[in-house]
Length: 217
Image (cartoon, rainbow, N blue to C red; front, side):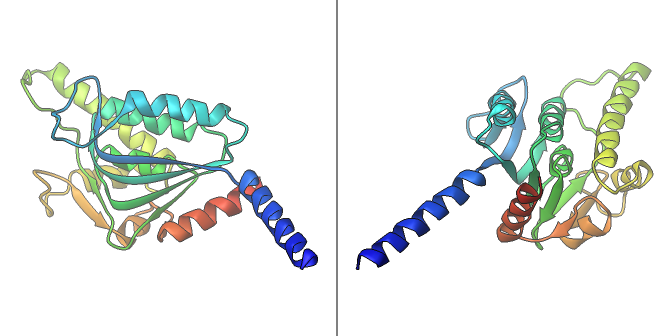
């Protein structure tokens, strides 16, 4: 009886050691990424001013071994989304992303910002040119601004994935699939075939890969 209890206690200690060794931080990007302007109360948002400090804390916390990023976003504020993506890309600890419902627009840089990426079979990614609502001045500087913003996005995606800048621009300017105006919808394995995502998989695959990366570090 005593021997059985001691064995059980030992198993608990070993399990506790494993848990301590593999502490994973979860970050969810959902709804619309909110930037400098507040969105309506009826809109589900991810606020960049909440996410950035969390990522900084993760990088500096010795007890955190890795990051799992869960994505289901329609996109949102471009500069705020890029800020989050750049933060994730600069984290020295192992990072893995999983695209669930979708990772559209500025959500694409977020999906590729991690060391390894997954997408579920029914997950989608929408790639389209930069858009702006409200008053737009019909002048060359406006076009130059749009082009600069788009170049920043395309360069980040190509740098952190296997997709080339030329191919990304082709997908953005596609008129065959009208996503509001221009763009391309990639579903599951199509995102892998285009070189954006590493692998089709689910939550168990994402955790398994992250644990492997932590062990190899």
